Every structure is written in C-alpha cells, then in structure tokens.
Image (cartoon, rainbow, N blue to C red):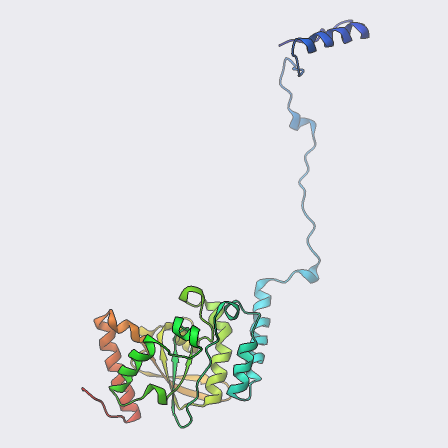
Length: 268
C-alpha cells in the first residue's frame, strides 16, 4: 500500500506526488485502519405513511357486500327465463369468463323431483345442458332401475359455470353460485331434491357436509320464498365404477328414493 506523507508538503509537491502515484497505477486511497462507513451515517427507519382511511378496504369487508349484491342480483329473477338471462349476463365472476357456455336449469312441468348435479363437466360446458354426456347416461340407467326417466325430471348443475380444467369449485365459488341455485329451486318449486356429489351437497347442506355423512336419509333444506324441501344426497354416479362400497350405497339410496316416491323397483 502506498500512502501520502503526512508532513509538510507544498501544494505543488503534493500534486507532483499524486501524478506519480497515478502513473504507477494507484487508483484508490487506503488508510492504515479500516473505516466504518455505517458509523458515518445516521440511519433512520423509514416508515411509509398509511394510505387514506377511506381507501383501505379489507377483503373481509368486501366479501359480505359482494355476497349481498349477488343475492339481490339472482333474487330479482321472477322466472327461469329471467334467471337464465341474468346468469348469461354475469361478467364480473372469473368462472363466467372462462366457461364455454353457462349451464342453465331445465324445468320439466309436472315433475315433482329436481336433480342437482355436480359442477359442469366438459360435455355440459360445451352444450350448456345439465347432466349431459357420460354422467347423464349412467344416471339414466340407475334411475331406470326404479322406474324414473331422467328426461322427465327437472335438473340443474350445482354451478352454472365449469371451473377451468374441471377442478373442484372453491368455497368462494360455491358461495357465489348458491343464490343462483336457490333461486332456480324456488322458481321450479320441486317437492323433493336429489343432490349428486360433494359440491352440490356442500352448497345446499353446508360447507362441512359430505355425501358419506348425509346419504341414506332425507334432510330438509330451507330455500328462501319456498320453505323446506326434503333432500337426498347421493354419491356421484361415476363413483360406482371404481368402488364396491359406492355401488352398495347407491343401490340402498335408490331403494330409499323408490320407497319414498312409491315407485316400482326392477331387479330388487
């Protein structure tokens, strides 16, 4: 390390020495002892000023308002046609923007039974028809064993829109869709509901409900402007292909449905 002399150099001598150091390739000045640069600066903790109170809205405060708006939006429908128009017009909900078509309720006049399916599958998403495709075919065979024709029953998907990739609906998505589901039930006015799969069961019977807990019995579900409707929760029909227990449960529940509706049972 090369140091500048501490004593008595004239300005011209000091300048000459600096030029010599520069010629030698010296490009920085070093001291004999380290210097703490942090000690030279008075550090201050910078705390950003909070935004104006009026502009701070937590997510917890937004959700109830949004839920209330959705309730009013769907509750305005005085007919299924008007409800369908409201569902088609939804543009502020992510599922409504990603779905191919909204899946709208079907009312069969004279039917006392309404079937609520799962979230729409790919066939339902493409066609806009609830319980379409493989699910409809299998459910039709199952209901046929107790003398029911699926085409003669009112029906609806749990949600009007298919989640991307066919994933499960989130609790927030289920809460958003419930007012539309309840309004459709109130307008169709069925005497009994049959609910397929976990999504529809949780939407109508509570977020902690599951097919395993509610199957095998009728449970009253309260629907605004309609009152209580006896509801039977079933496993999803596609589950019977992979589980012997699901097949046993489904047959027992079909027998309960037939007994309640006083229907003939084929193969019993």
